[in-house]
Each structure stands twice: as C-alpha cells, then as structure tokens.
Amino acid sequence: MYDTDVAQLGIKIAESGLWPTLSVQGNIQRSVQTDTTLSTNQVDNASVLGQLNVPLYDGGLTASQVRLAKELVAQSRMVLEQVRNQTQTAAIAAWVTHEGAKIALAATEAEVRAANVALSGVQKEAQGGQRTTLDVLNSQADLNAARARLIGAQRDRAIAAYTLLSASGRLDVKALALNTPDYSPDPHYHQVRDAWGGLRTPAGQ
Image 1 (cartoon, helix red, strand yellow):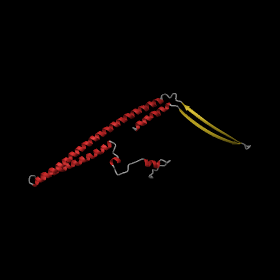
Image 2 (tube, helix red, strand yellow):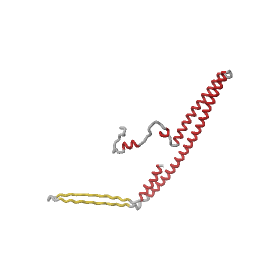
Image 3 (cartoon, one colour):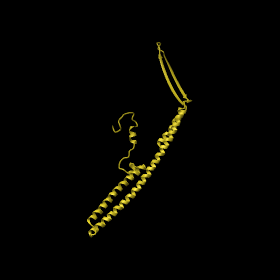
Image 4 (cartoon, helix red, strand yellow):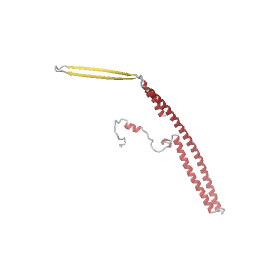
C-alpha cells in the first residue's frame, strides 16, 4: 500500500516537469576606495535577478515520464491485489489447517481415553485368568501408540495456531503476551536526531 502511494506521488513529480519554474537571486555589494588625498569613496550595489523558465518543447521527455509514472501506479496496484489475494489465501489455509488440527487432537484424546479403558479391562481380565500377559502387553503398546499420536496432534495444533497468527498478522509480542519489551524505533531516533555526524551508535559501537 505504501508502494502504491509512492507511485501515485510519482505522477505528480513527473507532471511538475510541465510547469514553469521561477528562480530569484539577490546580490548586495559594497566597495570602499581610498586615494592619496585621503578621500574615501563608498559605492553600494544591490541587484535582484529573477528568471522564469517556461517549458515549450522537450522532445516528449516529460510526457513519457508521466506515462511511465502512470504505468508504475497500475503495476503497483496489481502487485497490491496479488499480495492481498495471497494473504487471504494463506489466512484461509491456516484457518482450515488449525480447525483440522483441533479435530485431530480431540480424536486422539478420545483414542487415549479408550486405550486407557481397554487396558484397565484387559488387566482385570488377566487378574481373573481370562487374558494372558501378552494381551496386557499388547494393550499397553496400543496405549503408548495412542499417547504418541496425541503428542503429535498437540504439536500439529501448536504449529497450526502459530501459522494462523502469522497469516493474520498477529504473530508479535503483544498478541503472544511475551515477557519481553517490544521494539520501538522512537528511542533510537531521539538519541541520534540532533547528531551532525559520527559513526558511533548510542551504545558506543
């Protein structure tokens, strides 16, 4: 959007070549002469020179520059629309992925609960002599596999959440409520705005 604004101002800059320009120059001069008779002559001169330039013919240079600036505006608007579409597509895809990760997480949580119930039932049946130790071990293996899938689903949910924040432009310190100061260029600007020169930073580097 800033690039589009800059390109729009470029049209006005190019069109300024069609307007006349006026320049004014002032001069004040004083000369003092002393001759052998000890007389002094002082002469003061003041002049003002005004110059007005009116563009009559430049071989079409200014007109071509204006057309170029307008084409650049059209190009920047096309790029802006493309970026908007890409951002919207990325946000929609991130939202869909996030919702899918939520559903997958809920399913794996239910799977873990079911595996826990199944293991408890197999253990009780093994105590009553209805199941073997191998059955108990197989049920424990199923529970461990379900827990591993749960961990993977939790990871996918976290990644999807951060991807959604990034796509919507909210992956920053304030939105995440991080315990760290947010970067602001204002302090550095106020530290160096009155400096006439020098290569050292405010930190002494």
